[in-house]
Amino acid sequence: MVEQTRVHYQAELGQLEASALGGLDLVSEQLGRTGEAVEQQDVELAQQVIVDDDRIDGRYLEVHQSLIALLATQSPVATDLRLISALLHVLKNVERMGDQCVNVCKLIPLTGNEPPADPEMLSRIVTMGKHTRTLISQAKRAFEERNVAMAQDLVRQDDVVDNLNRECFHLALEIGDDADKREWAMTMLLAARAIERIGDNAVDIGEQVAFVVTGLFREFEDASHPEG
Amino acid sequence: MTQDESRAETGRQTREEAAERAAIAVRPGEFNHSAGKREKVFELKGVGVDYSGAAAVKDISMDIRRNDVTALIGPSGCGKSTLLRCLNRMNDLIPGASVHGELLYHGEDLYGSGVDPIQVRKLIGMVFQKPNPFPKSIYDNVAFGPRILGRKDDLDETVEGALRGAALWDEAKDRLEDNAFGLSGGQQQRLCIARCIAVQPDTILMDEPCSALDPISTGKIEDLMIELKEQFSIVIVTHNMQQAARVSDRTAFLMVELDADEENRWGRLVEYDETEKIFTNPADRRTEDYVSGKVG
Image (cartoon, rainbow over all chains, first blue to last red; front, side, top):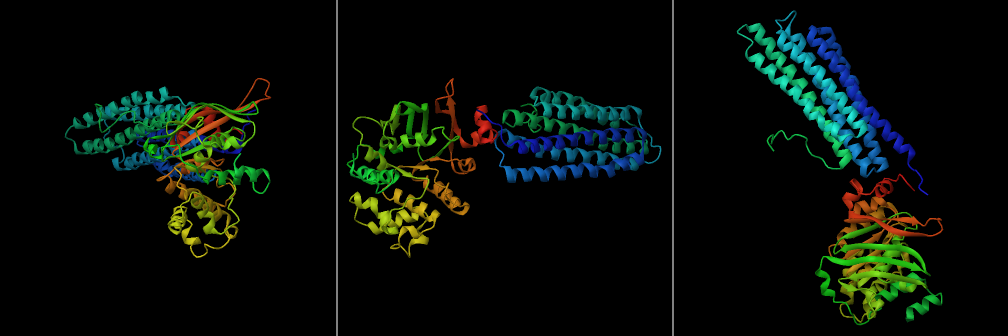
């Protein structure tokens, strides 16, 4: 007769997974407001995003500490061990994603009041933010469902963000000779780059999904050997 | 029946003590000890054990590698100790016990008609759950086997070497003539390991060797196992999964199977693999549930 044991431990691990993945909801919310602040040149909203990053950092510290305690006290092995390892990675990704939102928001006051925004470039950055939010929600769902195919699809989704980032670069090159406009474009390139990195973090979470399910870690895309 | 077994029946010592003494009561060897250079120490093919006709373990097939620590884990009643006792014919001492299937030791049939079980137990020593020193001095405990073997030359060196090998020399060197019962539990268990290795076996079987010890003593025995595997092959039965994870190179998971009416039960090998694989990514769901402690 098989009897289920360690019920409390399993419940605690489940709660910690929910809390860690819940950090992705916080990031998605932050990224949504970041996009809005960029689009509207809203310095106050940007400041609010910067302040609210403490919520993400707090989530990181709280769940990280609890996972370490679980490692110390429960000696997890097999799938549980892989899950905890993956959650520690995910937490780091969440924390970095939050920091990238802060990086973007810190740029907004630098562009000044009523900056000479290029609508084409601005539109792409806003689209990048929206698309990256879908990546974040897809990464979360793939983790919750242990869905490797959905996780691998993040690479395809991330290509959309990468392409928009490259388009921003070319638009910046062709922005013209106006010094103010060039300064705005260079600043916005930094913002686009930060959002593009958030997409990469979502793909990293997808790689952790594959690790939890299969026990094997491999990068979906090897940046140092792109043709491999 | 051997003289030692007769003593056991008279109640002057336990069956385990009789086996321990039998293990070191040497007769001319039949095994070619030099064949130990081969990778496999044991090859089990469809091995099963019955007690008075009732199956205790069924259909065990596995190879045990030389100079590895191999752990046998599984819930109570899964037959891991029974399987361990097959490896040096200790089950021979249990009335009604029978072993079937093929069990090769260095390529030779361990249960072949010409094989002397006492010689087997000299080459394949055993350490039990509870430390069982003889009521003698520390020195005489370790010297007991070599003396019976007629190895009386350099006995001091042999005793010192065995005590050093069992990481007990520094603690025992100034009290070699003291009674072994004066040692702590952990020291007594290391003395039993010293007594085992003093007769130069090639394999050591350990049946829950730390279950009666505190964490410090357990740590010392575990360190010792890792050092001893340089010279010996070790097979350990343990209920402590973290111990299996810490010390073993390969782990075998056995579980209990029941027949349809749940009246008869026996042990069966579920999974056998590198320990790291068993504890990070086991192939079988039943192994996963057991090592994770999710089922009892």
